[in-house]
Length: 355
Image (cartoon, rainbow, N blue to C red; front, side, top):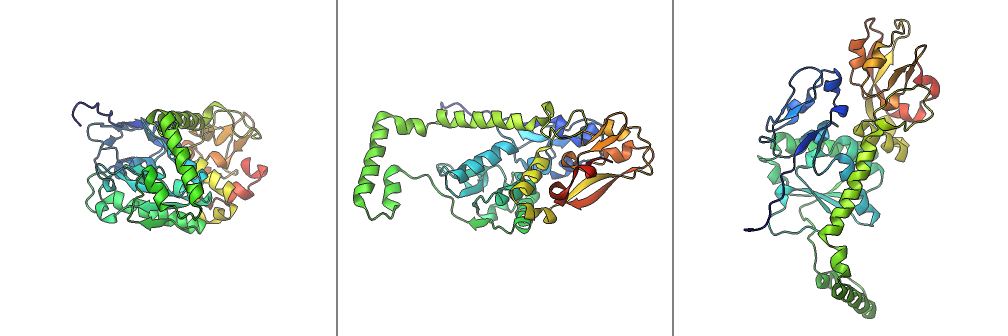
């Protein structure tokens, strides 16, 4: 609209503390997921860089790697918003920008994403494990030849949803209809209530709120922005778990960083332990017959899953992301990466955390 200020473009942000490539791994997944080739890896042990002119903000990299967020949202923000909808007793609807046409105003329980593929399997699994009722509201024909997400965008989210459904036994519903924001009279016209007096009383109360400005305040952008800022601050605090020890029972000392996807897996098995056997994870292992106790694996570990206290090696599998850096760091070949199930987070004991 002429004369109205334009919103600043959402910019991709790289969080080096969650990039295993910057810590020394050979991970290059972000290069293969970007439909616009906007991500590059300059050299070894450097975080990726983003060509902001080429980036279209699809967010697919969010679902691939913890190291990506944006100036407006990270995955904890998104999860918090979906959870708020559920806490209000509503079903959460997820759609993408390609399905929302100009002039169409979505209802308050609709989350509009740049691309549905920005949600990882870990997030979908956690949402279903928490019992959140969720529906994808979109016409999949827009995924074909989508300028924003490309071919990968149309395929990746279906795989993530299918995986989450297998793990939890829950279902994500699908609809072509996106709930539209209703006016006050339309809301009451659609309510099937036999007591006309209670309907009239409710309408009168809402009318009074409108007259006094309370309803306008409740629905205002200012108030909505306040809640979003509060959730962002809360998300940032959760993202930087390295500043404190979230597991005070751990015997070792040192810096620990909980990667967001790993935290979602832990929250999933805590909320629904029966999902653990169905969630595969990569975790570091040590052959103690080959280990000489030099501690090179611990000093190179980007999450602090391995900590060497000078006399013994301590290992907390809850922080291990299976990056394989410890394998390259060990000169004796004592470290390896094995595929396990998330049962290690449920049935693991203290002895299993000390090599």
